[in-house]
Structures are given as C-alpha cells and as structure tokens.
Image 1 (cartoon, rainbow, N blue to C red):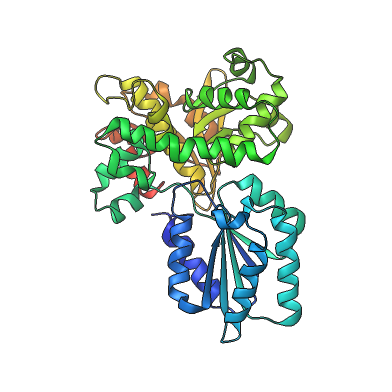
Image 2 (cartoon, helix red, strand yellow; image 1 turned 90 degrees about the vertical axis):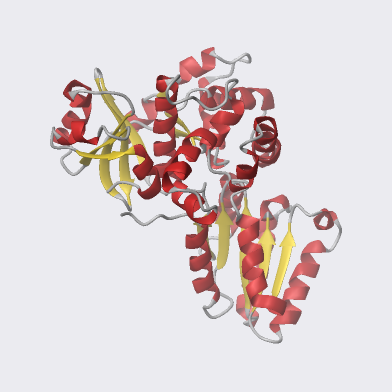
Length: 408
C-alpha cells in the first residue's frame, strides 16, 4: 500500500514536528483548495499552543483596518516573552504586499532571535507561490493540503470503504458538502457558493492576471465538461462564446490548475518541447465540481455506463494528481495509455476500464511498457473484472480499491 500524502493528518503531523523545532524556524506555508480544512488545521494547532498562539485571518473584516499587521506581530512578540510562540496567518494572500512584509518580519525575528514560529495559509497556489518565490527565497517550506481522498472520508465520516470510493466518484470529496448530499439543490448551492465562485471570483480574478473574466469562466465550464478527455486548445477555443487567443486559453487553464480546480495533463515524452505542443488531457481535480455543474448531476452506473466510466477515470487521475504524483498520458495513434504516474508511488502505466474489455483494448498499455520497461502496467477495472487483465500477465485492481489505497 502506498503512503497517502497531502492529507489532513499528514499535514498536521508535519507541522507539529516542525513547530517543535527551535524558533524561529523557517516559515511554514500551507496551500490547498478551498473547503478542505486549512483553517480548521490552523485553529487546531493554535488550540494546542494555548496562550502562546496568535491566529489572524486575512479575509476577516478587521484585516482591512489600519494597523492590523502590526497588531498581529506585537501580540505574538508579547507572548514570546513567556516562551516560544506561534503566529498563524490564515488566507495571507488577501493582505496587500504580504510577502515583502513577511520577509521583513522574519528577518527581524532571526536577527533578534525572537522565538516565534510563523505558519501562513492561502487558497491559491499562484498567489502564495508567486509571493513566496519573489520575496521569501530560502526562508520558507511549503505544504499542500489537497482534496480529500476516499480513505480519509471513510475514516473521518465512518463510511464503508466502498461507500466512500463511490461517493468520491459521484459527489467528490469536499468534507463540508457531505451533509447536503441527500438535498441536491442545497448541495449544488454549497459547491457553487462556497467553492466555485470564491475560487474563480476571488482567488483567480483578484490576482490581476485575468483581463477577460467571462472567457476564464467559459474555459472552466468547457474543462469541467470534458472530464478525462484529451482536448486540443483549438477545440476548446471553438466551444467558447468569447474567442480568445490559444495562448490565453492555455494561460487560463494554468490559472485554474493553480486554483486547484482543473489539471491540464501533458503527453508523456522524453522531449519537453513535444509535451508542450501536444493537446492537454483535462482532469477536474474534484468530482464534486463535475456533479455540481453537470445539468443531470452524477451519472447512474447502470443507466449511463459511459459517462460513469469517464467520471471514474477522472477520479482516479485526480487522486494521483492530488497526491503529488506527476501524471501524464501517452498516445501514438492508434495506441493510447490513460495515465502515466511518476513520483513517490513509483512508475506506473495505467488503463482505466469500467466496462468489458479484451486484450485488444490493452495493446496501448503493453506497447508503452515494452518501450519503457521501467513502468509497471496496471489495469483499473470494474469489480469482478480483475481476472481479465491478470490473464494477460498484467496487474489489476478494482477502481474502489485504487481510490482508497493507490496502486498496489
């Protein structure tokens, strides 16, 4: 079984260990999608430090008042007189010029040896990563609290493993939305109001890198409408009401990835130039977004096997991306491999087959592994179809198990 990373427990354990180190240590920057528990984690850690912790949120109304930044640091320094203190700065990217100010304060802590640990969080990878690279080089460590895997839902919400895996495919894994699953209208409203609109309307648009907001929203809609599909930029462009240059469409896809919404996967190749020139395979990073925006909601496994299969493949590839693996696809007509994984899981070539299949359907997988023998072939199947792949000497596992453990 692979070790699941980028989850709540993993981030909590890493932060606990780093906050036990001599203060001031490096700044801890926690990024991740909206509504996955970043604020909950910071408040939990602050509670464990008791009076030695200061929590402040950049999206709190008080953050707009003069002197907010200075008061946070003064409070932390006063507590540090009684021993090591921790300053938690939530949604830090909402504060103007935050990276330069944080650099100045951290340098002062180090110079004067003031024992304060600093933990900052943000919901946009682009906001936080850009600021940290520009001003905080060598001064920070970054953690990602990503979309919840099925195993975490099963453990925290006491669901059976099969129920958790099925739920990830049909409704995604935003923990705050689970209580509304039996009320479709309320569930969709939560996804749109608490996740989609803030992510696009604030996290992406607020950074000033989007000149055509309507076009960005259209690119997002087209991407979410094409789960686990290889779509050329020209085809995406052709589906837009507002026509934009191909470079603009590509840029907006990257912004959506930085907001933890959509990942445009590259084609596997040893030549970087070939990867960039190939059409992307679009993966929505949480199936809840698919269900919230599709007019018919989640697919029925028996009535809509094809759409259900696309959603299973999307969930499997999103799981790998969210776990920090490098995920690409491979295609040389007429052969294709659904996904290629590289990272802490090892090297895997993966086919996702939720319907009946034969050896002919696995030709792409076998050819890829013949050319690149460092990769282990894996077929992810519907329950009961594992033996079909194993008869051809290929590893196989059902998709419910994959979504719980990763490749084994």
